[in-house]
Image (cartoon, rainbow, N blue to C red; front, side, top):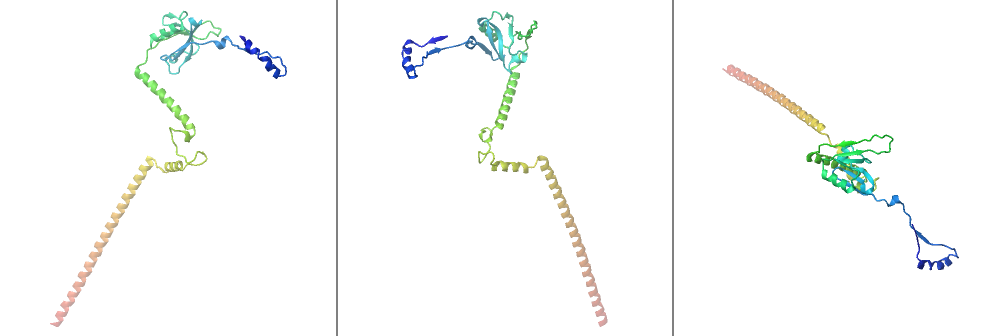
Length: 263
């Protein structure tokens, strides 16, 4: 589409042409567009089944699935991107508009029958028509799947945070005295040293048993020494008493001899 400049603006152009040395220039404002760029795609997203559908009788296109979520029921049933919807429950999809298809899927809830077929670009004339219908999961199983999905997402987020710079990580603060990664942190060095010096539980229990055995051995040796010292003391006491008795007997015998000689 071509649009010319109004006459009021064109009258002022000769003055500008004089400034450019008399070049004869025709000023035109052009707008161009194509049908493909102006095409608008209308679609709806079903959160329960996790699919996005476009097309319909109002758009003169077949109902086509253009997106499938990874955690939706449709992906578990085998539906893929690019499949054409042939029938929804017992209603043919040829005369359905986009709004009619949306209402039909929403009213069916978790008990939905979708007849789909793949892309027709191949040379085969056989249509891959599938009937997907299965018993819905309980709320407990759905909560478990949702919990696993959140846990996996959180784990991936933590991996991304660990790969970043530690001083920019708010979830995992690391004390650094400098923003330069070449400067070692005193706190981190101390923490690594403590981790290296920290004994495991098995080594700790082993050390406790060794200390207890050493203590028992020391007590046994001490007791043996005390017994030996007591025996030596008793032997010395007996020997000293025996010597004392012998000396008393000798003195008494001498006294008896002296008295007998005096008489």
